[in-house]
Amino acid sequence: PGQFSLHYGIAVESSSTVLVVDRANNRIQRLTSDGGYLFSWGTAGAAPGQFNNPHGLGLDAVGNIFVADCLNHRIQKFSPDGTLLSVWGGEGSAPGQFRSPTGVAIGDDGLIYVSDRWNNRIQIFGSPATATSRSSWGYIKSLYR
Image (cartoon, rainbow, N blue to C red; front, side):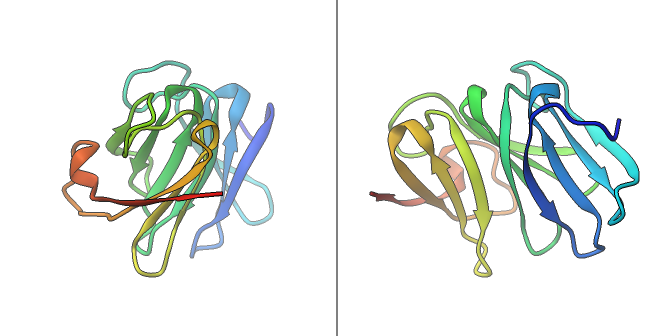
């Protein structure tokens, strides 16, 4: 804990704690603003709550954490204490599917923006509080380069 192996994404919470995507260890670590270890969650795997090469993360207005789980081709949403809330995506090129998502950001309007690397697009989603599947996440559109 508190050490990294190929750290990637980082976000600062409203409480000034720092979240770090510890990619090669397949976990998210929470640190104090001066680097002290608080806790972490995640293990290697494909089950909900597990990661396979996570990359980016984003925070919504209430502190929920969205993680781009790159090689599982999905986004996972966690509560501020690290409890899994929902998962969506899957490998593919249809709306709501991903090919190695690498980044996720949440706008002030609550829209979720996902960098979908190998599909060469940004997908935009709504964020209903009770989302349980890919289709219920309210796919809005894709932006292509």
